[in-house]
Image 1 (cartoon, rainbow, N blue to C red):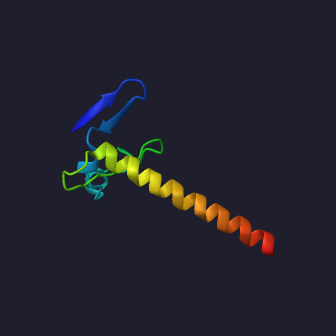
Image 2: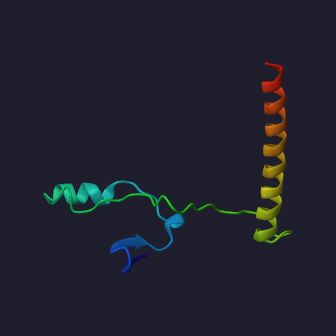
Length: 88
């Protein structure tokens, strides 16, 4: 569940999508009189999410199509915003 990253010097959770933070470790450290024994922080350079599908499409295709839809919606928003600014 945990591994030591020699480059960063940190102990990291292997599969953080299966771990939920509940503060138990910090409470135990507090009970032991060592409140600063451990610090748990989210990584700022990673984002995990779960893709659920019916099996009709591979996960890569689901992501590719979703990003295409998002890109189209952002482009439409940009066009509408630009038009709105010109009217003002």
